[in-house]
Length: 575
Image (cartoon, rainbow, N blue to C red):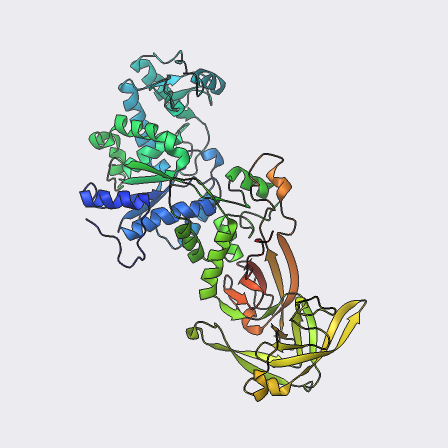
């Protein structure tokens, strides 16, 4: 028996892992194999992260093998751009596959297997068009009717299918269907299509194939050819499992090596086995949509800036927003694996981001909406360097030198000329502590056209760190940036893309109607030099502001651009 990796703790005990433990303990499998099989027709989203973490996580825990396999059986919707992005996303999440495979690697095996089904009298060529197939299929309460072409002879079916393969017939004119049971209570078993005619070039095979296999047919054969022991998929495939098993049993690859001989000849490692499909609940999260069709519409209609828009639930969008991959792995662990569909609150994801960044992100100071503050009792030429910890909970992060002068930038939210009850920051005549500096009192407020332009304050020199007066209590502490050394920066303040919990519902309007007009805002402010020198994708906690990341593409040290990953606290709870 192969034991779980002892370095992985704590041990996870969901029902899938228990099945695997039982299979290993019984000797059914000496080593497990799983796979992550995306269709390259779009960018991966957070729902895929759950499946990635499950499949690759199980591989790590049980010393198993995990393949990345592209389900590239529908070339009309697939693109090499998506292939590259999917590989990038899996690696970004912290995983590496055993083998990179494609369903198209097995096209010849799919074809030979279909000929076997025909020869066994278990598949036939049907001339019904799509509308007629739906008419003959029946309903959930009424059985279907046999196709008038169902009783074609084996010889006739084989001849027609070989001619389909040769490209003799028009798109959509014929299909190859399994001969199962048109009266089955499971509609998926009512003579499902195995092949359709699609004269579309394929990114891997070119014009070699004018016919392409259906997903339910290709998927199970691919699993068998790769020796997948546990084929993990979401609950919507539960009703497809009887067809999965039917194809596996009736093609019987382990006992018909002539079917997969082309793979052996091509040098593929083909540990043919009989896989077991196991379903788990998919990830549903509120305040977003995860339908590929709707995500594509958001991009194509210009409602977002692209697939990697930081408001999108795509992994590339989450990455650009500054979501650490460790936060997504924590999120996957926290929501767990079950058979019960549920909707996860968006705040669970945000809290995982906060927890991860609280541990890993160094602290810096930034002012998003600046107001000038002048300390009148310091000389105009005053400059000093203050030593500040990079992380309050981790001394290993070291310290940095922060410039301080008589001219500072503070955030507009930290001053109120007419304070409301309970306001404890800067106001005329009141005291507030400047982070790491001391206590200042606002004596004068300068305004231009009714807008505050400068605050003139006195610093209590006896309140400086190390002085006796530093122990004096004041209720408010605010952050700042030295105006003489500040670097101008762009801040992109992102929030939830939708204003309602269930924008995916078609009741009451389109999801487009619920777009949050305040989900993307930009402002110009200032950061301390140690923040400006960040490398792209480096995250910080900007003190009292939130967690920000240097933009993956636009950030430069001389022109910093920071995206807000998440606020310090949940701002949606009250809403």
